[in-house]
Length: 100
Image (cartoon, rainbow, N blue to C red):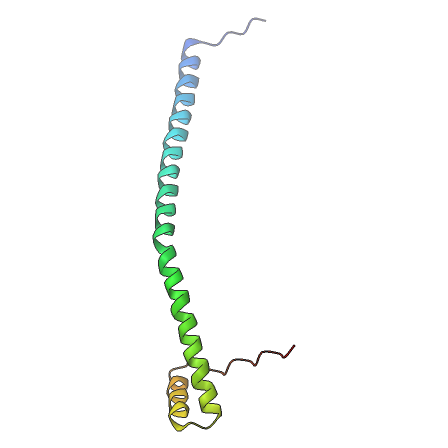
C-alpha cells in the first residue's frame, strides 16, 4: 500500500508549521522585550530600596533612643512615644547587647 500525501494536505501542514513557528518567534521576541524592561525597572528601583533601608535604620535608631529616654522618665520622650502610639507606631528600646 503506497501512501502519498496529497498536495492539499502538504500545503495545510506547511502553513500550520509556518504559523506555529511564526507565533513562537513573535512570543520569544515579546518575552525578551519584557525581560529587558523588568531588568531596567529593577535597576532603577535598587537605589530607592537602599535609600529606604537607610532611612528605616535611621528611624529605628532615633525611635530606640526616644524609647530609652521614655523608659528613663523623660517627659518629652514619653509624649513622643504616646503620639507615635496614637498613630499606630510602637517603639521599643533596643535590646541590651549580651556581655561576653
